[in-house]
Image (tube, rainbow, N blue to C red):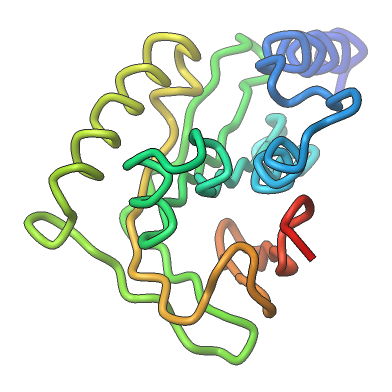
Length: 187
């Protein structure tokens, strides 16, 4: 790799760090719900991929704690698991970000039990509407990154954010895990 290529790659990485939403910064004196919401976002800087481009993976679990207590949205997100994934590559020569297309995702619990994916008419109208609104917000506010996220809805089985156990999400050649209960859950 030439010195000029290394400089471009570092510039691309620096720009991607600057453009990361403020919600991904370390919270100061967070409330319990903020701790859970913060823990539910995984970012993985994967370094340089096989093509020499910067590579990053993001997993977002929309936990119920993100929504006001006793709201219909919070109750809906307690019943269903919504997970967004993105695996992006920043071209070292141009700085253009591209995302892998993701058609399937098969998360499960720590015992190897998969969660059942819901699609089409199996997704409740309240959740489908919330997902459409959220998708539009992400696409408009986060640009290419917002367009690169693929969302999935699951029947959670035994997985509960404030219950015991583990949620495992195999994606982009890694097994991303959430240890449960989430931080901020009542003890």
